[in-house]
Image (cartoon, rainbow, N blue to C red; front, side, top):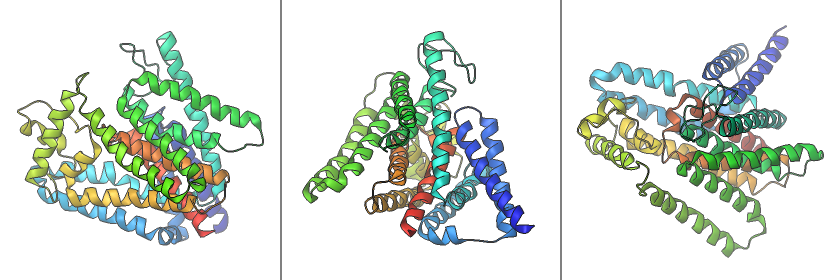
Length: 396
């Protein structure tokens, strides 16, 4: 009887995560519902059959994640009268993701499930592409009924930047799947058509940060695929170009001040003011919007438009460094595994997931996607799938 219950719970967690993947661009309510179901079922499963093997296999990753949360906790020492808001941000905004991440890593240790997740992602992304096309040419989109605003597409998201962030993460994943020689030509054709449609959609968003993230992800994908065939000096040259060009392009785009980009400078000054005042532990988690106006002469209440600056301003340099080490370890491990395994479907899925993650994080230099309910879920889900697959392939 217990085995049947455990099997049911395992399958329930799996399909709840599929639900999260499908509804990320469509419904915030359904994301919360399926994520809650996945977390509850996963907790019950672990209570009935304690198993921490997935944490042991990724102990360095979870150590960095633990340090990240420890320093966010310590930032509450500077929250002052806003400590209640900081606690809410800690538990409700950030605190829901470690357990969800563990559920994804633990549940998708079987690579066959990740392939199913890719089909769910394909279906959901295809719907997004179609609905953006209807919005562009007919003035409305059929998923959320959003009208075309000032000629700029947003699809089912609140704005074009959120749509661009979703596409920046998803397109490299689907592009990686296009490279695999599918037995059924119709499957490969579906991936190719959807990817092409989404690239056009990304162009329509007019989001330069999204374009930079997408270019980075695609370049990264091409680099890893061809790394096997390169000589050592060519590998070094390409790696050097990649490492140096991305920040330079990012700064070039950032300092391009047309189209009201001056707002980003003002908010960056506000973030830097907080950082100079409390560089080690920040002003307090979740307090940026409360304090930002004080540093820019009452300009207004906004996010920092830069995930990394906001993490630093709110929770300090140690918190930011732990987060960078956390995601950096994911990239290091994924690349290391991909260079050691033969070409297979799992190989292309792994490099696609890693490239999508790379594009998302580059775009986060210009937006605060990790503070968005929808987009934070795509980050943690893709990150979890990347870790689960690289861990599985590494153990083999």
